[in-house]
Image (cartoon, rainbow, N blue to C red; front, top):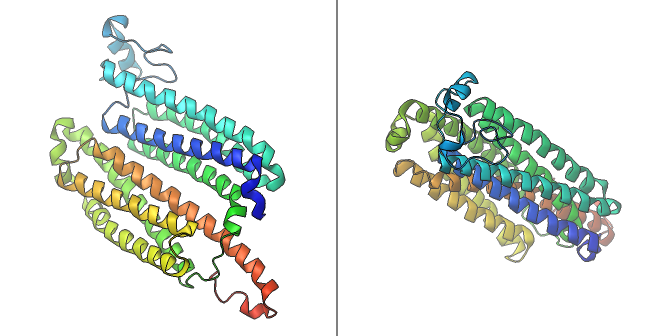
Length: 346
């Protein structure tokens, strides 16, 4: 198990999977930028764009009655905008490219079966989820960007990230097994689950704020962006204040790790990266709340929240692998099984 880091098949798989995960996060950033810029309906049909696989570059290339055509399909305010159309088209091209990358990741996982079928199964599951995500994307367009559908589309992207991270964590099991957590604080396990719970609550409130933002945009218009905050309901202020709770809980978690495992342990490094991401999320959220919801900051805030989810999931998986390996090794070095679990929380 400890030789996994030297296994060529696992090294190739981890490299491909990390590139794919980074690409998925890039797609999340692109999608958030499309949404913040109001380019989501730049292509009012799917999978084509204004009836073509390659969208037009000017309104003159469309039928004179194209607005009537799309009005009959339920899009009463369709108006060609070359920037928005090609922004949405680029978003779709990136999505298709990442679909191919996840397919390659699944192919690379075939050679890793001898190290655990979970790597192969999770990689194939991620590829199948991409197919469902594509279908869901068509429904998002068909719903004329209904906020609930957009949120579901985003949650599905996070599910794909989580599935890929699970596969990568399985491929890194041997690496984490070589890093003991025998000296870890006994409070770490409990605090890790508390932090995960706090993040879930914060993300849930964030999705509600995001949907309310879309609703306010529909009712007030883009030109009144600076006044959107005034129309926000109470849970926006709770979401904003709760970020401090999430930040301090994670700071405490990081302190527990660094104090017991040192700075060089993988878990410590992942947790410190998580603190940086949370700091970015808090700073971007404060900017949105106090500077009139600037469109350029919205994608940064969403990306930071998505990265936080991924890092915490990877920390949880990595901790479990290190803990299980430490627990399995301890009875060999101690005759008393009662002492083997004292240093690690379940």
